[in-house]
Image 1 (tube, helix red, strand yellow):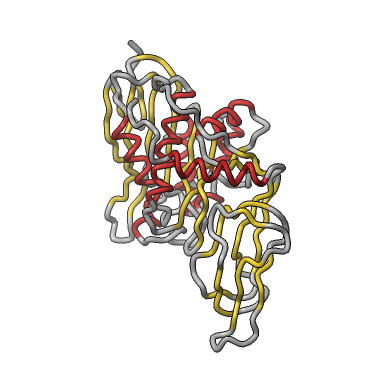
Image 2 (tube, one colour):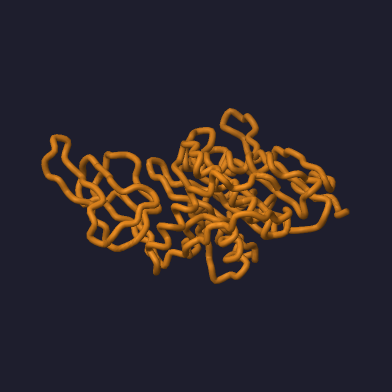
Length: 339
């Protein structure tokens, strides 16, 4: 048996689970605002894994991933502790917005301050009450509004543990992504806490592929950390590491007719679609600047000059990356669900 787990003044006994409501702030009506979370504390020692979603309040796929993971975890069989926070940015979630009420991006406010802006205070609260209690983090995201992402992991791969978790997650694409100042990844990595960031789908949507892949990926990470028993069966798809990525931007205003779809392999010089004026004049072709795989694309046909249209990831072996994506999609229907 291990000692009870303490979080925010609450004691969680080994082999149990508990839902908490952490007092965050008040609305301007003086109604209390809380951050909901669940702690699953195992009977045997192990890592403390944080899975969190909706740092951007309109990113909903991660919320469902957190709930599906919780439904599959039995505290009697768990080694270590799972801390699950489905909605970090409760202000944005209430308003169906990516941002906080002051229009700040919470994922640029870390580590925050007790006496700073609203975003800074929320970030400080989250770090002080939750992040500092954890040993590993899986941060769940989606694309922005009207943009959808192929399931992918973003991580700093020069850390061996982070690289191991990124591989274990099982997304078809891994981006060796630099860390942005003010992000959760930045503050966690500075404190020696490995973080992988999962991107999939579009804001304000529930997308079955993104949710199923994310749920499977978090469980894969937990098995790799020894928190859950490993499963045997079909070998997982080997993720492909992108050497770089580029957004194609609109060269003119108009209506976008995009032919390329998430997961498509494209070649340098290939026409991926067109942008036309409302009456069909002044057509502009959207041309791939390099070989690669489409890992993100705009889902709304109205574009202004300079809008990001298509995100292309480059690989040393583009054909192999395409096969990896195809196998990944096929495998989601046959992956064993038992733990």
